[in-house]
Amino acid sequence: MIAFEKTIKHLLTLLTFPELGISIQESDTEIQVTLTLSPEDSGVMIGFHGEKIDALQLLLSLMYNHGQTDFKPVRLDINGYRARRAEGLNELADKAASQALESGREIILPPLSPSERRLVHVHLSTRQDVATYSEGEGRNRRLIIRPQKTQSSE
Image 1: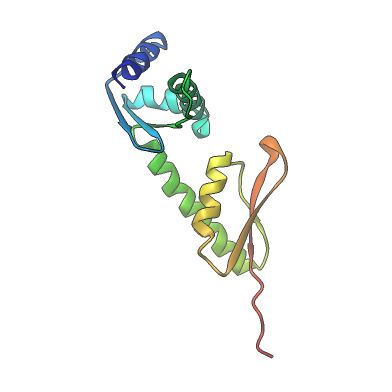
Image 2: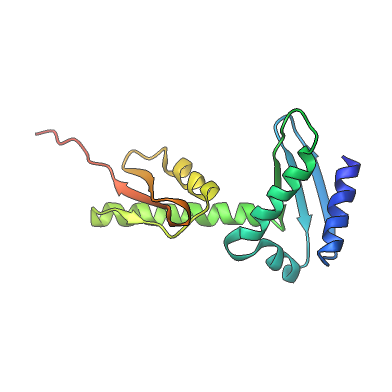
């Protein structure tokens, strides 16, 4: 694990990001890498809607698993971005679910990454009053929240 940490530090140096803090925790199922950077640097590393953090996470996962027989995904977080994003997505999902119920119509969410769509699906899966599904392909794939039809007791 020390070699992987050195590799990450070297990569950040090459990317001209002065690494301020790094934490690596290994479980049976994944490697959690947490970086603590200045707010300016973290914004650049996270990118628009997390595109850069996702790309860096993929790169770290490929680097860690190179030559391994069992693949273990690397989960990257920078300055708590993943938790804040999940909280924001849950709020968005709840608001859209309320709008769908009030209007009786489907609500189409803005573009989300596959992992973000999954978070919304899982978050709303416990609710009986709304249903979720995804439609479209690639970057045009959208998550849709619709009110569930209730059975009338007539």
